[in-house]
Image (tube, rainbow, N blue to C red):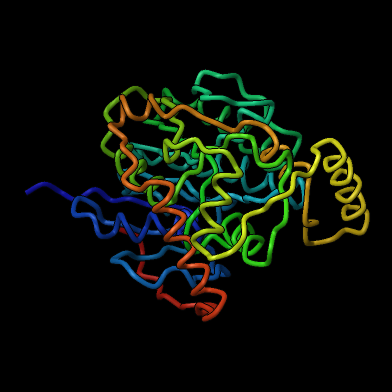
Length: 344
């Protein structure tokens, strides 16, 4: 009888991590654990056959990761707002600390969820993995790029695979998805450049499928894969899909990119001067990502991972909208306590 593989998912309480842990825990070949902090909000972790371990990326992790066949690293500080030192502590130092523990204890595979932000926003049209990194001048983009570059240096010591998902959206995402749908719901009237730029949406369930394929991938350590729905779409069309699903009017006006960017720069500077914990409504990061083509090829993933996105962007929008309407009208539980069960 074949032994089940033991999988550890970091950031298991997060948007992507929670979808991963619930899906993989229902997949026959795997025994799944999630790594969370003791202070983590666990409202997303309500279903699935998995256990939780408590720990921090910036503490010794050898005892935590020992005995696992694979570690899937989703934990990150993901925002376009925050203190630079916090981003480096989590996204760079924490990632390297985790990887070092995996190398020392003989973990077989390390799957790192990076992001297409490493390519920058200088205009991407079916961008392939070989493009040189040119991150936007933002702490999140810079630290994700640095972390990816540094772990690639260890590819000869552990079986390493890097996934670069594009604009990930889906149910329980309280940042990008919720903000976008709320904007449409409340009557968003316009978009930078009229929404003419292309984007590569990545429905979270497609990303989960890509990770499942990666767990079975037998290739060379250090491989990198772009992941998306495989349906490049103009922002105007994407927003129209959402609006139609919600029974709302899509944005109709075009905001000029130059003046809007200048306004965002001034607004961001003001918020930083006031040491605001919350970001302004618009930031240079958000405008840059929406105003230029942000399109990526997934042909490599199709070829080497046999990745075939099981959900269309229309499917993803439909399920995301249904979640949003339920969330705003019937709030989900704030926190669900789940007992610590110990290591494998």
